[in-house]
Amino acid sequence: MYEPLTESATLAPGYAAAQHGPRPLTLFLDLVREQTEGDASRRASVLAGLRAYQEAERTPRPDDMPIVARAGRAVLRDYGGEGPPAVFVPSLINPPFILDLADGNSLLRWLSGQGVRPLLVDWGYPEDGGALDVAGHVAERLLPLIDQLGEPVHLVGYCLGGTMALGAAMHARIRSLTLIAAPWHFAGFGARARGEIAALWEAAKPMAELIGLVPMEVLQTGFWKLDPERTVAKYGRFGLLAPGSAEAQAFIALEDWANDGAPLTHAAGRELFDDFIGGDVTGGGRWRVGGEAVDPARLRVPTLEFVSLNDRIVPAASSPRLPNARTLGLGHVGMIVGSRAREQLWQPLAAMLSQAQQS
Image 1 (spheres, rainbow, N blue to C red):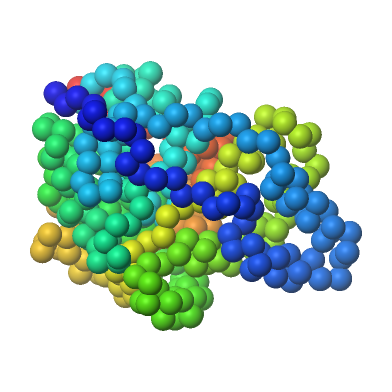
Image 2: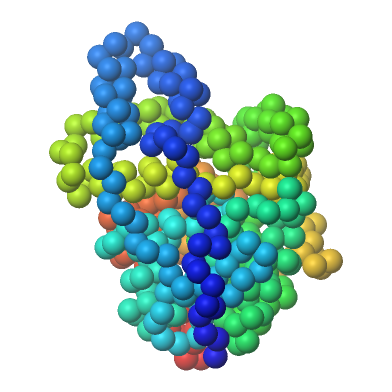
């Protein structure tokens, strides 16, 4: 059995920008102008809500959990609990703490009291100037972290982390695989969305090549374009909430997460935009990890997949289509931290992990 490392839990640095607000703020303000043109009252309410969000008191996040393995700047954080380890793989985009968002709204801390031993991959800040692509993160970060545990694990991947977990499942000793809102058939994003993402990448590519990184702001701008009206309107609604209320604090915690995040390496950005979204190499069976093509049909372990029919970030049509799939009516983030997440995702996931480790 593994023990926590003695190193401080500060190996993965914080990502937060100095500002409390949408990143990049100037482009967000342009979006506000576009969405509220001709409606001065609505514009004023959105800007008032934005200011209230920026100036609101923050509830401290839960403390980081102990580190039990590391590979480069990536570390594995132990949330306690019992049973075989369940390794949770978050996306490379946005910080991993969406799975541990706040006291009383943490999937991982809840699972640790349900007969599950969750461990969270924290990718840290890119240290190699852009050399590792997505497959490289699987081969040189995720797989070594899993190997250090010395026993088969449950593997659970969220968003792009699910794509990566599928790649790791071809090589790691695992007891089960669960995917949550994981894109695989990128052609399922649709021609229009893929075209808009391609244009965004073309504009950002020269800078990314120069600095070896894809700033989080580039990715955030792409997310905003998926639903610009909602992106703006939610700040107007926030301005109507009672300061310090539970609903206001929940909004702040989620938006601080959404406006946070380390950059992608240039290689990971190139693979994501050119090969995954542009070329659908995963859905076409051409994505290779460790020199081997990743084929979901070769999985020989219990699987579970959560697919949202209301997901604006990862459409249901892009899912890997594993045999054991559950469809939800929650959004991409709501399925993890929303008011109905415990019933629709947390509890079925805990049941799956408990059953798989007894088999």
